[in-house]
Structure formats: C-alpha cells, structure tokens
Image (cartoon, rainbow, N blue to C red; front, side, top):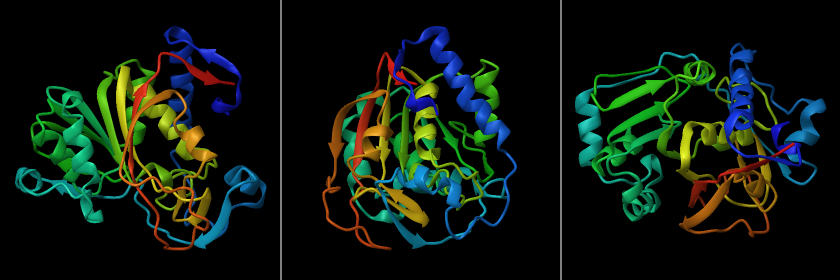
Length: 280
C-alpha cells in the first residue's frame, strides 16, 4: 500500500504518479457486491485492526453508492445559509468555530466538501464568502445553486487521471472518512480506505492547501461496519502528508474503552498540505 514505503515523494511527476494510482483504484472498484458482510473477511481482519485496534460489532447496510440521492435547490441552500452552523445533525459548535477562526482560508477561495447528505457545510462555507464549493458524495446530488458543484467520487477520479482537476484551496470533511472501506454505504471493502481517502484529498489540494477534518476520536477501534474511531496509532497514519495547525474541540482518544454507540469526541483537526509525503 501507498503508506508502507519509506522514501519521500517531493511533488512533481512522482507525486502525480502516486495520485493517479490512487484514483485509478477508485475506477477499478466501482462495482461492489451487496450487502456488505456482517463481519470483516478473515483474510482482511489483521489489516483492518492493524493488530492494535479493538473490533466491535455495529452493523449497517445503507447503499448510498450509485443511489438516487438529493435535490439541493436554491431555497434549500439559502435556508441552510441562514441557519446556525451546528455541524449538521450533531448540534455542536465545533464546525462554526473552526470555519470562523480560519475564514481567511475560505474567503474568496474554492472549497470542497467530502461526504454530505445536506448542504449545511457547503452553506456555511458560502456564508463565509467562499468563491465556489464542490461536493463529493456517493449519492447523486442535483443542485441549481450557482456556486455549488457536485460530483460522484468516480467522476473526480476521472478528472484527476485526465489532468483536468483544478486543485482547490480548502477541503472540509466532518463525520465522513471514518466510514470509508467498511462497505456500509456500498463502497468497496478496503482496510485502508480511510487512509487512501485522505491521501486522495491531499491530491485534490493546492500546494499548502488546508484540510479541516473531523473524525471520531477514542481508542483505535473498528466498529464493524459503522465506522472507525481514531487513537494514537491510526490517527498518526490518517494525518500523514500534512502539518497539524490546530485542533478545535475536545481531544479524547486517551479514553480507556470504546463501546458500541458510546460517547466519543469529534474535534476538527486543521491540517496543511506538506511539500513532501512519506510513502513506500
């Protein structure tokens, strides 16, 4: 896998080749079996847990990938722009605090949201004067709002491989990437799906671009197949290729136990793309 190597890729053709490889993998795995298995495949178990994470049963089958999704018309987007930013259905102020503190990375910039069922994050970015907002989501989203564009991940992969992707200034993702690779939403089974998603996000950013990333923090755990929680081992892998600028919210991966449906912290880590990444 891309993160197992020991050399450093310094931009240019080497990094472009790595990015193309990551996006080619997206196109190779467009068609997946359904429903997802109720337990991790035995041959993949050690890779999912890294022989460090706990494994907890918490099963879902919600086929978003390729599904007919949402319509975000102008009135819906305007409604969200006028509504408080409470991180969607999480009813916390972490997202608003992060965006306002780092508004200088948003104002007049092209921003991207990864994973979105309703346009609350997009609206919050537009409210802080983002020039344009792009959304990447498994479900098909139709919108007539002039400053919004939506893509399926496979479309983004094709644009990147064809060198047609215009790098963005900032990426925002909250409660999304921890699901990748678990099959819950019709995505391919991949023990490293979350790590590869962050690596692809890095490919979509301009040099020194910003990633605002909100994932649940608790001891390293795979709650199959609901999501992952991030402790000291996997969090370090997740943030490879970025400098950590800030952490907004409560940082709590030192809790002793992760339980099904239990309380976890979900702060936002503010990351900046480095000029070099370690790969194998």
